[in-house]
Image (cartoon, rainbow, N blue to C red; front, top):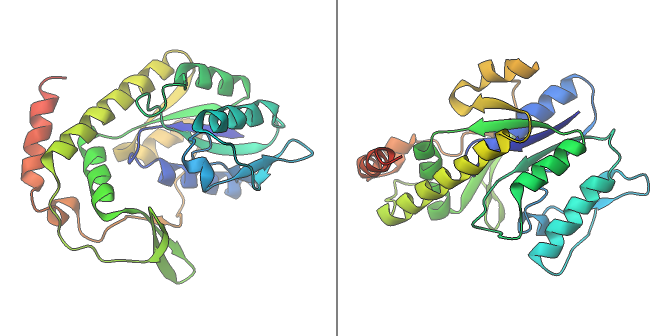
Length: 248
C-alpha cells in the first residue's frame, strides 16, 4: 500500500501519517514512513537511500542544492520497487520552491501507484498553530514508553510548558494568506488525480471511506492549554480571520 497525504503545514498531516501507519501495522503490512520526503530542507535531517533491491531505506544521501535534492528524491521514487509499502506527505507550497511543479509531481506519484489523501483544516486553526510554532519553535509532542518529548526546530527536548504568548497580527495574516494559497493548489491537484478528501475535524468518519480506523498513536496535542487560553490576543486574531474570510 502507498499513501501520499496532500496538505498544508499545521493541518495535522503528521498525525494522519501516523494513523495510516498504525492502520497498516494492524494489517501486518511492513511500511516505510517517508514523511516530507520531497521537501528539500527536511531531506537534510531525514536521509534515505535506494537499496540494491530498490527499496527506500534509511541511509546517508545528500545533494548540493535544494533543486538537486528534490530531483534526486523524485528519481528515487520513480526507481523504487513498486511493491514496497510507503507513506509520505506533500506540502504544495509554490512560494517556497519555484522549481517544483506539484501537479506534475502528483501525476508521477500516481504512476508509482500512490493513493492520495487530501487533508483539509480550517485556515484559522492552521495559521494559529503555525504562528504558535514560529513563536515557540515547538513542532510536535510525542510519547515514548512512559515519557513525553517535544520536537523543535533544534531537535528533541523534554516536554516543555509554554506560558501564554502574544502573536504578531501582521505575521498571522501572512500565514493565513499562505494557507489560502496552499488550499488552492491542493484543490487543483484533486482535479488531475483521484483523491480522498478528509477533514481534520471529521477525520474518523472521513477515513472510513478508505477503510482506515483511527487507532492510538504516539503523537499528542502539542500544548496543554487550548489556543484561546495560550494566546493573549486570540480575539484580535479571530477578527483578522473574519475580515479575510469575507474577501474569499
